[in-house]
Length: 436
Image 1 (cartoon, rainbow, N blue to C red):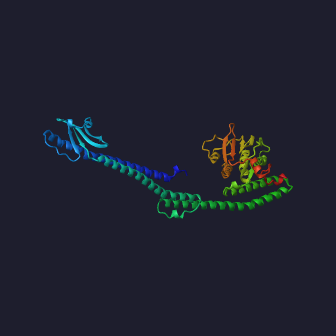
Image 2 (image 1 turned 180 degrees about the vertical axis):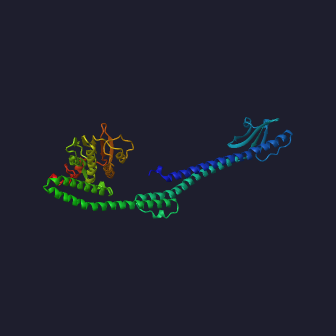
Image 3 (image 1 turned 135 degrees about the vertical axis):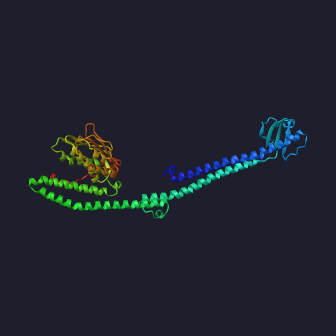
């Protein structure tokens, strides 16, 4: 997690901002208070002295002033204090700051000077203390924010790690606060998901195991019928054998999809060879029809994946294209890193586009309004392999499916690493008895 995205950093910043704003408010209040005290202690004091000294000076009486305070009238005003504006001002004399009240009366201009006031030093000390208090508040807010952030974020990180690793969270589930409620909810939800996945995996394994035996028996019986010289039973036996073989392959694919994907540990297989084999395998579907099926392109695609999954993904696309194309062509195109299956059929109906996750409405189609189970299986296989399945309609009707293998490897590099320049994983398939 990036530092600027950390929740702890946000909490600390909020505390610091709160401390700074609160300190500034206190500083403003303190400044107003200090200025008010200055007006009361200095300005009012000098004004009282002037009010008391002016009539006594006019009557020629002796004026006894407080210590450090001097009253000057007319020509008695020192030259450096004669040009001061009316009111209380600060004047500097020999490096000292003096408070001076300047005014005018019937007797002429006058000034009252406080030579011993140390209010400026007191004011400086007060402001320095408030500055230090401001810094201390900011540091305290940062420390408190970091502490609260760690207390809040650390359990959340522990919970995230526990959920990502699939482990239970006993220390967090025992808490009585909101984090404990969240931990218990996640723990219960994770347990439900784990139980559901276990049931699905066991169901898939049990069904696959139970189906393999009858499918093997059916294929064996079909082989016996194919060896019989009676021509009347040969065509049905071929269909039975082909259907049983496809069902066996589908069971194997479903069993593989129920397992955790560990394709990185598998040896690379040639997707190009699989595509050519599937093209040859489905030639029987277009035999005797005005549809041509061919594979073009010389690109070699090597992918770390089970052969059965690659065969099922490409085979389903080719089978659907051959099944719903009434005339024209079905083309399997090999390009670097991807396999494209194009056809000149009627296109996909709305129901099948929804299986592919496309929200736009498709044009009415005369093709089969199937449920798209084959395409749904291809989508699952692509997700398992880390590949992507894209669909695009052709300009003159038809469909174009593209399987892009993100983890496709360079066949030349694989050959160099294996030490055999002609090395490639051989793709084999069980040949039907009637093809021998």
